[in-house]
Amino acid sequence: MSDTEIEFRDVEKAFFKEDGSKQVILDKVSFTIPAGKTTVVAGGSGQGKSVTLKLILGLLQVDGGQIIIGGQDTTTLKGRQLKALRTRFGVLFQSSALFDSMTVFENVALPLRERTQKTESEIRKQVLSSLEELELLGHENKFPAQLSGGMKKRAGLARALQLQPEIMLFDEPTTGLDPVMAMEIYQLFARTQERIGYTSIIVSHDIPKIFNLADQVVVLNNGAMDVFPSPEAIQWSQKPHIQEFVKTTMGELYQSHLVEK
Amino acid sequence: MQLNAISRLGNSGLSAIIDLGRMGTYLFQMIVGCFRLPFRFSELIRQMHFIGVGSLTVIFFTAASTGMVLGLQGYYSLHKYGAEGMLGSAVALTLIMELGPVLTALMVAGRAGSAMCAELGIMRISEQIDALDCMAVDSFRYLISPKLLATIISVPILTVLFDVVGIAGGYVAGVHLMGVNPGSYIDGMQKSVTNHDILLGAVKSFVFALLIVWICTGRGYFVHMIKGTGFGARSVSKVTTQAVVYSSISVLVFDYLLTAILL
Image 1 (cartoon, rainbow over the protein chains, first blue to last red):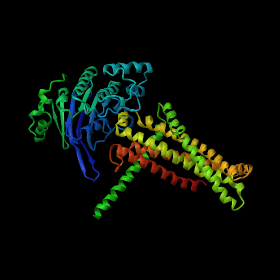
Image 2 (image 1 turned 90 degrees about the vertical axis):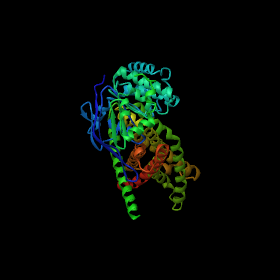
Image 3 (image 1 turned 120 degrees about the horizontal axis):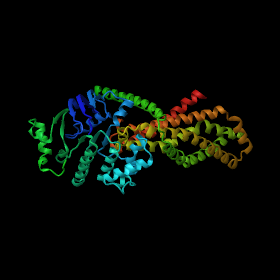
Image 4 (image 1 turned 60 degrees about the vertical axis):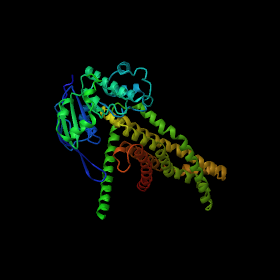
């Protein structure tokens, strides 16, 4: 199991709108993402869920505070150090972000070709094995435009897992998928996490079902962050915005046991 | 009201300075990316095929028509002074020093520059470039450097081809249509064109190639950061138009500057 813990210390992030006004996304936020566990980041649209992921990856810079990953402050990293940090991550994007001019095989093989010294036959063996695990065997010569939404997600997951990441980031992984397909994707998360043991951070709107995977839940609201040690703990919060959040998005949380951890 | 106008002006000025700084850093990174390993040789060949071989038809027809027009108009002007024998010299010098590099660059900007910009813009808005960054794959080495090298190799070669076809077009119009002596056309050209003239044309085509690939790929790469272009497909289309306009204007401005400095 991964021993890489992620800690936010007084992290600040704001954006300036086109009219010059300032929108605070994170206002001195502190919390810890435990190693080898699954943390779900929830919140309304525009509350900074995807920004949080991009800050962890170093795709955006913090305005203040520190992000400590595996004991190292990553907010000051640049160039090769930042590249070295990113070798520890796997990312499944909301859009899957597959390279549309490459086949499924080429997409999944890309990190192995670019970042390892493996021979072409070793790469082929590993990629086909991954595609088999994710039920994509037989589709390796198709282009992303020829795949369904669920297949694209699985291909994106296969690519993200090729280098055995310590930390997996999932950005809205089930957006646009039907409930059956979404459940299949969640089951894949659980299965691959059990095999590889990565620390998992999931940003999702699909609150009731995704909470079945969560060890910890973080709710973003107007720059502030509320951390709950378990999905069940949310219902005990006395904060009005959390109660509203529970009411609007999680009414069926405890009726939903479709996904087994 | 006045304060708003001043504020908007200030914002626009700041945006322009930030944009220029970003593009300056981008130019440095794209050049450095060429020296990072492993080099994508197959992608370089693919890009050279797209930029070079793919532009042959448009370059051929543009050069032939330009050369023939120069042949006819040159004959018309020189005939007034009884100097038809200078036609070869006039056509060759005009093409080698001026029209060859400029028109080739404008054709490449319109055909390949727009395609490079749109490709990178789509990759940016569909998070494909973010995906490369997240995989710790250098997006400059992987995506930009093959385009840079392919452009600065292909454009000078296309310029030479433009010059040759243009001079042949001038020969057809001047000698076969207007009856200029073929010997004087070739002889005038050989005597008047110097190594310095050819070098000027070569420097221009190299600089224009750099301008095209820098501006066109840069606009696409930063499509998400360019203010006032909207979002999604619309932003890509607007930025692609911008890229062709800016690179064409830059080619014309640098054409004057290089001529003034090097002539």
